[in-house]
Image 1 (cartoon, rainbow, N blue to C red):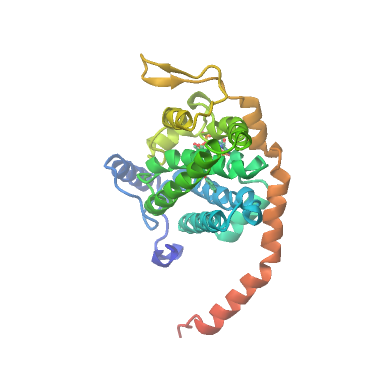
Image 2 (image 1 turned 90 degrees about the horizontal axis):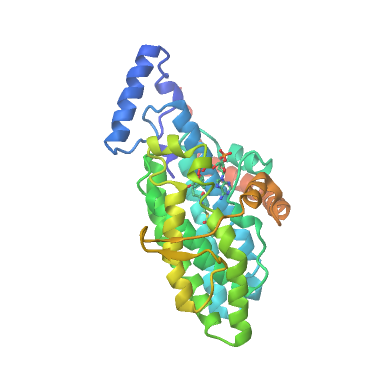
Length: 331
Ligand code: BYC
């Protein structure tokens, strides 16, 4: 999507002299301080570029792997309307993955390299997608809580300092907001349904609450990347700040559903004007980050199989493109 604007690397050799680099670094930092967007052809420090590739590609993988737990319920949606809405939502997630892979490609990494890093476990994706979807209420809980958490995290990213990432986030946030509402609407239907349906909604909240809080990452004290990413304005708010906002917004939504958040320490703190909440199980978080989540192996094998089984489609598309848009040879 953005790659057509890129200059070739050999158009403009990177400066090597340290004085020149110091000057460039200073100019780069001044632009960050002035809240200007950094664009693909602009000079940027190598560590900034690597941090963006890491975050954007992991974000893209999360969107694509995130299609799997919901896809699991497409054939069992309780009505045609629910099926059509869920299908549209899952397609949106695939689109988000594509915008994000394209944004990462502008930083000089190929789609194939990113996909390979996912398949070999060198690149992460959100811990949340390593938990199974056990019943239809989980589709409601994912939309409400997981997409709700995603929006909290992504709204500040609309102002991230890298232009292509920020612009991708604008559209993603609009679509995520529809996703959150479709999830909440399923929860409303179930919470106001039969006692059995309400029990399913509560059980789903019990299972998805804590993994949703883990989506925001480790506490700021234990986050190795936050300080530098805040300085570069890649991240505009810290993990703990966004997590707190999510809790503050979501507690009244649970009350409106007459469902109970599974945290005995949850309490409004009138001095802080925020909810206090209990301790996340950080050892569970880190083990899921390491790839030991309940359905981690299934997720990666589903993605690897899809990539292998789709090879013929990529080959056919490449052959079609070569026939219809042959690269013009310059004499
Ligand atoms: N899961 O220093 P930290 C969606 C890793 S898609 C896995 O705080 P950072 C949806 C972290 O990568 C939503 N790993 O890192 C889709 C780092 O390891 P590396 C996805 C995690 O980057 C379909 C290490 O822990 N959203 O919602 O400053 C259907 C230390 O962390 C997690 C995004 O990707 C985690 N939860 O901050 C429905 C948003 N947390 O990379 C819904 C963009 C931390 O150094 N990403 N780690 O090896 C971000 O905002 C940031 O990358 C994070 C982490 C806040 C996630």
